[in-house]
Amino acid sequence: MSNPFEYGTTVSGSAFCNRTKESADLISTINNSLRAFLYSERMMGTTSLVRRVLAGLDRDKYVAVYIDLWATDDEASFITATARGISQAMGTDASRVLEVAKRFFSRFSPKVSLDDDGKPKVSFEYNPTAEQARQSLEEVLAVPQRIATESGKKVVIVFDELQRILEYRDDHVERLLRSIIQMQRNVSYIFLGSQKHLLQDMFLNRKRPLYSAADHFPIGPIKVEHWLPFIQEKFETAGRKISKQVIEHICKLTEGHPFYTQHLCHAIWEKLAPGQEATEEDIQRGLQVLLAREAGAYSALWESLTINQRRFLHGLAVEPPPVSLYSLAFVQKYGLGNPSAIQRLSGALLKRDVIDRDARSFVISDRFFRIWIRERED
Ligand SMILES: Nc1ncnc2c1ncn2[C@@H]1O[C@H](COP(=O)(O)OP(=O)(O)O)[C@@H](O)[C@H]1O
Ligand SMILES: [Mg+2]
Image (cartoon, rainbow, N blue to C red; front, side, top):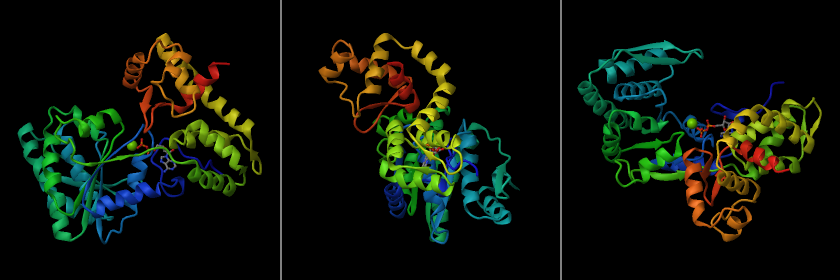
């Protein structure tokens, strides 16, 4: 029996836990043809969530387009990624996909092949000048509206890894997106990506084209009450056992962060024989395997920090969340001088992605690094 806990890739089907409320909110956004901007800490599960919502939409009523901008670096690659996403969303057989691609994107010379799973995959031969790209961009971004009007279906366009567009030559894509998303009817847009501070700047900074162009959807950790049945069921169908208390302890250690929770469960499961029950010692054993793997990187990171940054992180790691960082008690307990120092410390650590903001305070981004820091103490 293979390990039932998955980490590091998009999860779907039975590997996907809960997110009922978030899914319902997104479906409502789609039904109302609105725009949503999802943001979260790294690996919190935004891609998995959105892909799952799209997969659940009735194809008779919706056209669901997923566009991954990760591999794009200019307008031309943005155009082909978008055209590919739209074409592939329009059908499951190669001839239909090619027909759509030729109809809307003939000037990019589309070709269709089959990927490893037998799904049609569109590619284009398109090397435009900057001027040509500029023109094509408007055409491509007008296609969702054409599809919505012609088909009578609701269209949803997802742009994942949106922060990539900040690396393009100028903000033309951003500006054009702003104007088209406001005009289109029966089309909704969902924006997400993996660098929260860049994305937040795109939507929260008044000076940027997309400022206030979409509703904000913060995506947080998964609650222990949802992890409980999920983790228990995975252990049981695999002929192992785990108690409520042990799961609660795992979730406390990972703070319910999906990636770290799956990763730790994977490590614990790995060491159990069939029929065995996971205990507190198994948690420790699983953790030691994971921490040993990261020890070099964590030590190097720690060494690179100033004394006060280490004290600050230590306090953040050991105090029960949410930590009141600006309180005199915290500052005194960890020898940080006065509360005004906190802003500087947190600013520097935020920039390096060592910590992140959550709804209530700051958190150490890497939940295993947090545990490593706690364990150093004794
Ligand atoms: N709903 C979920 N249920 C269980 N595990 C999840 C869920 N969402 C995310 N994960 C875990 O987190 C990892 C990262 O998910 P992903 O969707 O790629 O996050 P993001 O796009 O926010 O970086 C997955 O590999 C998986 O281990
Ligand atoms: Mg992602």
